[in-house]
Image (cartoon, rainbow, N blue to C red):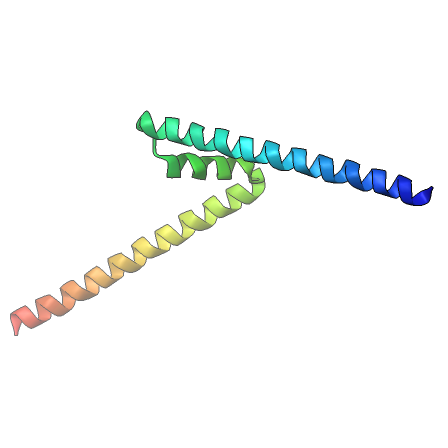
Length: 97
């Protein structure tokens, strides 16, 4: 009797998994169609995917990342400015020689 109950449960679970897999495939097709529609309308699908990814993130985590990006971009600009000044100095020194 116990084997019959276990077999019934197993059939129920496998049936449920099959339904979920089928729904997943259908959802993937719908998602692909939506991205193709966006692309045909001239939207950048890569940007849309990025925006959706950002929306999923925790707001505090996103703010922290934005702060780090801003900090690094300023650091890079400062570094580039210093390198340009050094290059100009070397060039002007060589020019006057």
